[in-house]
Image (tube, rainbow, N blue to C red; front, side, top):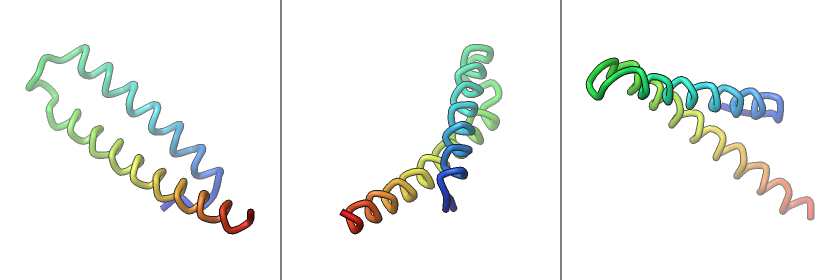
Length: 67
């Protein structure tokens, strides 16, 4: 779970790296090849997106309470 802006920055960086890795795998391997690897990367991307969304929602909630 992301609980600070430092962790948020780290997660966004990791997300970009995973997306680049997935793009490279898709270019290098035909459909069906390295399927488990691509699926695993997609799963990590989905998990990071969910965690980022939860953190962003909590930040928005905190900001609206402060205003």
